[in-house]
Length: 264
Image: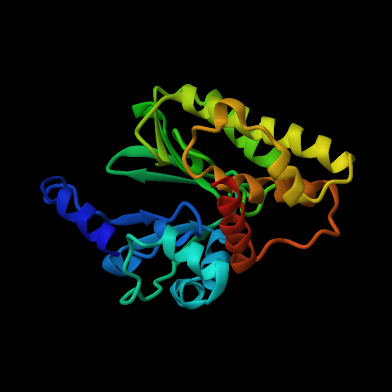
């Protein structure tokens, strides 16, 4: 919530003449919606799958994860160490949409497209055609390692293709600096790399942890947070074998914590 407060303060000169009337939650990860309570009197919009995920995993669940003993809690505390979640109260979107929603904001056409499930159950990109801009949420991690919480990776790759086909000049990612479609193509290349490397090791009978440990990240080894590889490999395994259960939050954090220890 503190991050949202700082953002609103930085925008105060702009919003003085163009007040915020609508808020879009691109997906259900807390770093993208735990500030909703500061804008609870505005129209908050999200894709229907995103809203469902927000209700399933909110601030109470994250606080419980942070309080856990063991590797999952320790890794979660490392990841969230810069955030104070003690006073976050969930405020959910009241306006839900399915697949696409067209809006007019200050006379400008804005198009919302749910390209999920991919990163999460619902992933909204916000396209402003007249400005040549797309806000991607966490469909794009510019200069970082994406994490496939939900998948399938094939959907994420199709989302990357769609963004590249929009003809935009500017890409505002969910994480990283404002960029261009070059970053989208780079991320798609990483996802294809993981997909191919994981599938080859699945065929050899390796477990997903063994596969992640065996993969040489090569040019992707310098990306921050590359311990996410183990979750991404699991996502590929789950696509190849639907009987493999999904990694729940604590299990995913424990896997990444253990994998990061092995890298040291």
